[in-house]
Length: 353
Image 1 (cartoon, helix red, strand yellow):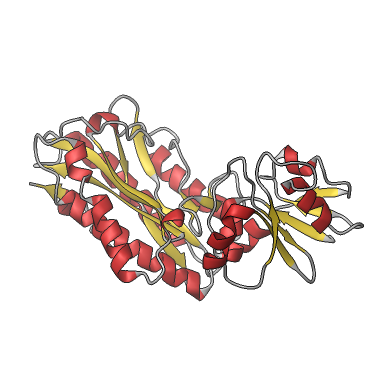
Image 2 (cartoon, one colour):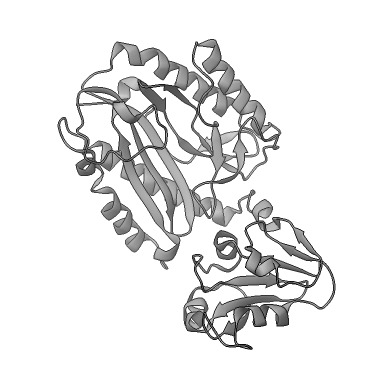
């Protein structure tokens, strides 16, 4: 390829340390063998200069909309080599690909490069994981019988901001979005339904608690299933099955393993225990987002390598009854794996009150 066009804001952040979001003023990164050009709105130049890392050839356009000769498309046409194939990300909109005269190949090179984390990235993810673990401890300590979910989660954002502002030298709020959430028992069979902020916390369970997102440019998550006052008898077997799946995933996650085989082994444990196929995969990766490829899923035969970071979060979901899931952020090492989030996971240790 004579050039590669990067449009995905996560990939641009990964390559430049500049965080943007998609709107009518596009940011477009163009990589060639000898140069890196960054097409930016003129009003964002100082913003880019303050945050960028490395040498970038900044190409400004006037505004959106703009008159002929001053548009972002004019800068793109000028920056592209006159000959050769152009690689573009799958996330590139048609408004970009439609004005390229060269042959085009859709290829996600940066996404692939992001799969293996550097030591710098691992350190940043480990710090985020520590902050999220502290936020989970704070949140679970705020759960009271009869209180609203909103009351229990209210201290999470101040805690995250306080640690970010005191422990990070150059905290970037544009590259941060994290939250704490709790599902009461009646919502836990629906894995991603955290819309129950006014629900009251009552004795029993299972509840599912979550701290997730990204802080200062890197993602992590931690989840724990917990109980209030006591563990209902009917919750013990599905909880134990979820834990058996979790232990199997930790056991199998090591260099040379295949992601689909890990998920299949976890699904097999659920099926043998008499439960339906789990609603979602065993895990996903982290990096400059809180949710990315590669995955631990039966549909992806990816080879596990050192430096990858995954969630381990197999779950059991019983329709119209309850759901059970822990999640940890886990680093693949040269010989196995190690969790970057550390919090009790046995059901007896997760009874509040």
